[in-house]
Image 1: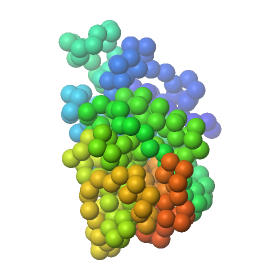
Image 2 (image 1 turned 180 degrees about the vertical axis):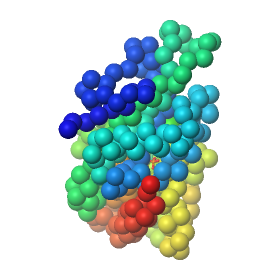
Image 3 (image 1 turned 45 degrees about the vertical axis):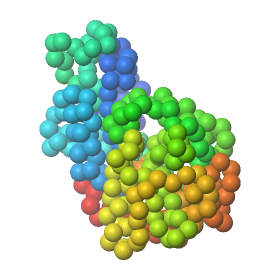
Length: 287
Ligand SMILES: Cc1ncc(COP(=O)(O)O)c(C=O)c1O
């Protein structure tokens, strides 16, 4: 059986699933999204992603398309129909379909919902984590509301492509003061020279990563030193370790920045341990 997508109340074969040409998500990026990691067919960090979804929708004054309970049932049904155990679940909610006009539709339209499920090769992901990846840096050129998980991802896509062209896995945006904000699709971390875990605070213009949030709990439980303070690419190069977090990457060690090695150019013990602890916790709490 092939992949199946959910579009506005119906399941359809992945290749035939379509949205309307006047979907405001398609025409204006007037939409938000969420991504859950799937462990053994269950949604990791479910609550955190629902909370952020509701917040993103509220910020854009788009209605929640259905209750959290109903959405959970639909997401799980999408997972079941795709027969995927290890993977990612993608949900997009747009303002809906309306004649093209920059302002919101005056007659209310129902939000449009798309769900897809894709498989992840966990063994390959673990092998990648054992090797570590490179990141590049790029000037921050996104808008002032990166805290909303919108589908307005053109700067992120361009940055990711720049990373790929340089043989790196991720691009770190750097603000006008020279500090790393976050990655194109992940949050950025270092273990600094003093053994303190550093990641930018979420008052700044960054996405409040759910993996980041859960990892903060793990870090507190482990009694590790933490400072939610920005760092520069130079700080990362002088650090003991660096890593990125997201539902897709989980915890992925970073071994180079702009082609220069971080520490010995190998994944460090703290990032490796945090990856293991996050996965254990995600598996234990996934729904
Ligand atoms: C820009 C950006 N920052 C951070 C993250 C990490 O968020 P999460 O841990 O909720 O996946 C993502 C995830 O896609 C992202 O796109």
